[in-house]
Image (tube, rainbow, N blue to C red; front, side, top):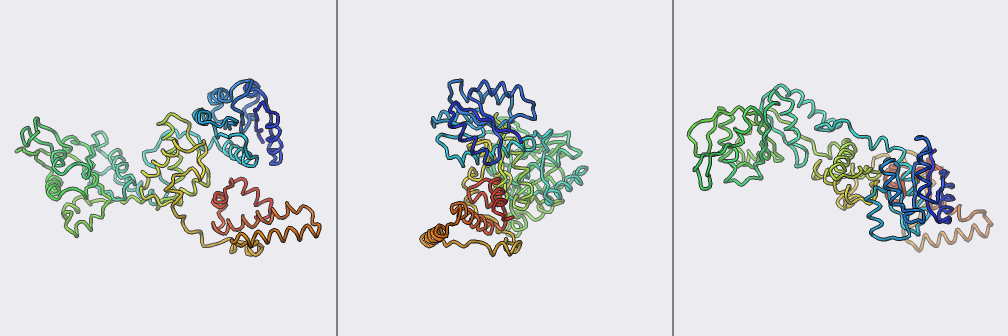
Length: 486
């Protein structure tokens, strides 16, 4: 096991951390000056480098922030936890801007410090897997069966020029699919032109689509080509087609029927060599039924229909998409990509995502800026995710998996006076009986009750139980082993 390196000019701090980490069977090596750390890093083999460095921020031998800056250049994958007795804003900001894994103000709670170091060790062990750069970013991503169906459909349409109607909720990636259909079509060498029918005022939409002649209306000071002409030989993507006014639907139908159109104010027919891909988040059949959309235009557009699944139907893809968006966001902001804990990732997979993939992308941008450390924990998630109800637990509960163990659960009443009096009475009883190690025995029983209750609540999901109890995944695993709850 790799060592945890401790850097502090205060011998008492080093001693406390050494002893606390030794109890967790974590090897340590201590230093007094930053220069010693840099020299030691240069001397050891890569396989013997530390898993984590815990460093003070202000020491007679140099600054922990200066050391952090040098380490991030030479050893970018080494997690560094910065400690300081000067808990000011500048120190915290400087630590995180320098790429610190976490900021630990003194005096600190020793168990919490050990928990933080264990978390950093865990992340260090899988750093190569989670931060490995993707050699080429795919245009679309998805392992869920519903997305595989979409990919297969794009493949089948790769040599076709037929019109396609893409349906799906807002934020599902309809324009990405339109781009993919164009890229993998015979028209790939042509241009891809997009227009959002809901974003352009009704009075201007006709001119935007078909262009206009000079003087055709007030303000038309020159002849202008419309989107159909701009997309000649390529693909025209009509987004939010369900919001197109009825009179324009008639003109669009004529273009799709005979392949010709007129500019606004024009008298000469213009031939349109354009493939049309339309998209909408609305139920067009219902719009047709209520007279809001032309039935003949609907059938003209609906030659091939692709339905994009909402993100809640492809939760299998959420971990992969989250990692991808965190990488993209970090690259855009010029910072190191953050990692996300298993508990936080599990909570994201339980979120309904009303804004779909676009909302997940925005959340990843938010986390890149707002999460306090390099590892995103459950508590770092935005309020809308934390406030959302969790999906129901699996049908099989802890009792079904291990009925004998469930019978051993220690019951504690929610009434504080009742359970406190019970603990007091049990303590007196054990002390009068001269039971050895009363503290340890009672603590084990209390921890057993808490962990079993948490596992019952989460249906046996350890990561979620640990998050709700406020402990780390590794601590939960260790406690379950120590208490014989496996």
